Amino acid sequence: MDHIINTLIPERLKSARENLNLSKAEAARKIGLTAASYVRYEAGDRSPSPQVIISIAEKLETSVAYLSGETDDISSDVVSIYKNSNPILFDLIKSMQSADDATLQRLLSYYRKLTKND
Image (cartoon, rainbow, N blue to C red; front, side, top):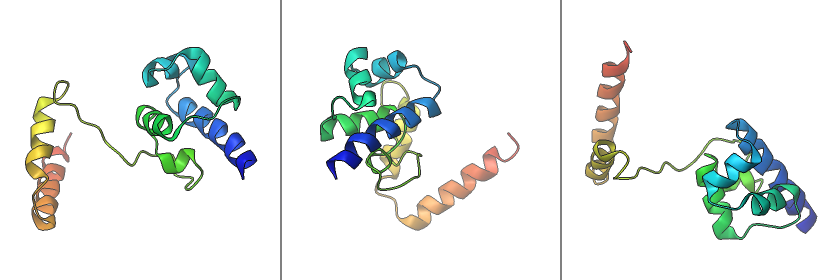
């Protein structure tokens, strides 16, 4: 099992990085690692901790499930919205957190109508 994890995670890291057209150095910067640390993870010389895998998944716009081999779907399952970088979207999402499903469906429908001609 460790052999599968030791080869799967490096392959999935490379795939996620290449999906974003990033070099190893760019991926390392985006994640907040040194280039040497990232290269060791992608080469399979070291295994990232669970906390690092979560950070890598977020920064490489994929999921922990993809990196660990639970799914072959490379798409992200988390969206991070930071108040400082996108305050309007942050406020919208924050205000919608307590809305019921019907309200959210109406809002999504309105949004799709508004952006249909874009």
